[in-house]
Figure (cartoon, rainbow, N blue to C red):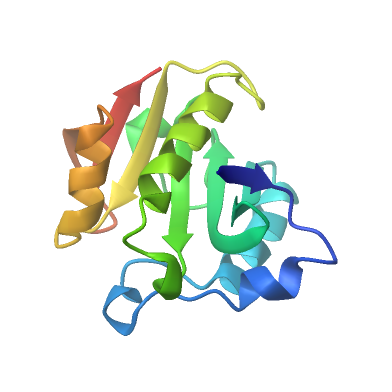
Length: 158
């Protein structure tokens, strides 16, 4: 069973050590970099929501959600909406359905509006990340035609 948990002093090193495959490194920042980005975003008016992804009691991944501003230049959809800015499942835990199960948990959480009300959730992704595109589309996300920072923007109405 997949759960989203806070990153704590006890689990942080395990989360920082999770990695994607060599081929996937061009698609997602390291978890340490992402957690550092959360700090910078939080101290500059943003609303980051970082979580460790657990399969039962085993840490298997990381997700960084944001609300409103992401700390980067933003597409028009960003204002008052949620973004799944980073999502990764460790290379040794891939192809077990954890990505899909995690996305379902993330969307359940977002629909509780933990940082504020929203109409949409959006995800930036690189055009050549066919696996991500397929996953997002299977959950109802659709590209909105925007290309931002060389990434396509996929959107889901909440």
